[in-house]
Image (cartoon, rainbow, N blue to C red; front, side, top):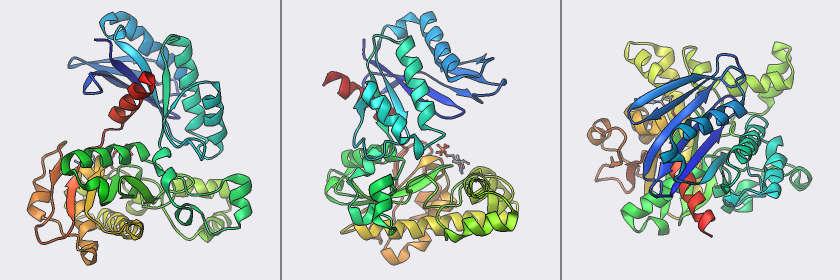
Length: 396
Ligand code: ADP
């Protein structure tokens, strides 16, 4: 059947892709081009239980998409089912409040937002332009990480800085992980029926991590800001702190403010505190073997996640559901438990047995009956969301 979508997530040094068929329900092939920009770059295809790895000698985004096209040429039964392409785009600024059919104006809009996402948006434009060359007849759709949060009220998205900075430069909170939050909100709506009329807190905890409050199906506050640095402590990002630290660090270490910012983006968070790793699984293993630095990093991560959940909850009329998602949210029973311990005052009570025995990769309810809040683990599926948006815009 001719109903499949090629989903492309083009990052600065990687390109993830998947072809989803049957309204996004079946993954026909998926893979990743890694270490783009270097001579060690490779692209991997996973299809029918087999893994195929091909070197990409020039390490460019173009050769990655070209390899996908060549793989499809060799697998015409899959290529013939393609009806469109969906691209994940990190920053849509205030221009994009929903997914968009890509034309020259949309490409220009994505370029305009590159000032806030200098590593990501230019890579997305590259991916889109190459895809137009190689798949000339197919419509392409852009799905924005920021779009879901365009429903925030002004008092939530404005920074308390001179208004001229917002008027002249659009400096404001945008928020990210919006495609994941939209998926969780819709999925929860299918399970509970009433959640689209209720207050939902979601913790998307991965290497990048944020929280979101969803009021009657709409994002009402989120922890990330003008960039994904604000909010929670993350794998390598500090999250929110006193902005004066930026100039203190650059003076004390005799480095530029950009270099100081790069410490906050790539040497902080779980990695900076533990001095071991940015990876939650590695830190949990170290903690179990008695490493106190790993435990401190994980406990700080939990405390700060809880603090931000409580903070975004101020935009809800009631807290009816709390959802954990993302690599850490879906898999770390330790962090889920410590985060919930911090939220007892909000009547959020986790069932420790259900939490520790929750099956991997599946949805489950882990709330204690005596609490007032339903606590869920829901595996996110951003690719599905992108495929569904693509189908819906193509059929429009
Ligand atoms: P991102 O998409 O932001 O790169 P992911 O959502 O893939 O990140 O999450 C990656 C994180 O999930 C890593 O810190 C990893 O250690 C953590 N993780 C994955 N599986 C487990 C597990 N079984 N236990 C604890 N943490 C896990």
